[in-house]
Image 1 (cartoon, one colour):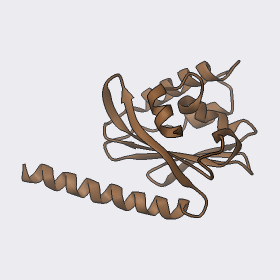
Image 2 (cartoon, helix red, strand yellow):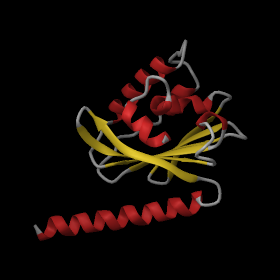
Image 3 (cartoon, one colour):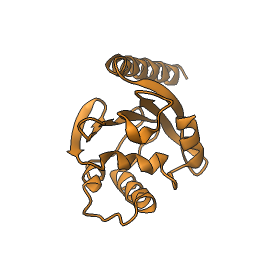
Image 4 (spheres, helix red, strand yellow):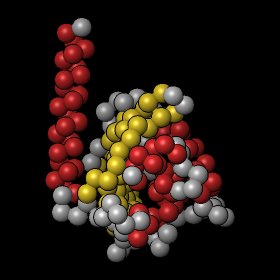
Length: 167
């Protein structure tokens, strides 16, 4: 039991340190607008947070960021399959050759404590995917922010999570 408490304490300190460094980067331009549990069925696999320049403005017309902190190991294929599925549900005429799919192909497997960050800069139309602070890649495209429809679109990954993020 002592070892488990020690592991939990180390994990909390690590996550807190990572959150502080991310918050310092965001402090100049982003505000945290919402967060909620990432659920697959009834099982919580992590926590998502939504950041924007203005929480009152629609997400589609500004620079935004979403963080996904995982408490479960998740294979790469699961991210890719889910992303493709929800892009098809939310974007009319979505094709696998879409520039958005370049971001989907960047996903790596995660383990407990890993943090994905998806950032969009409205002025440059650049969408960037990072894992634990390391940039995996980016795209520059007029429709790049549409990738967030996976979580914020009309047919999101989880409707309750969407509501928690945007309200």
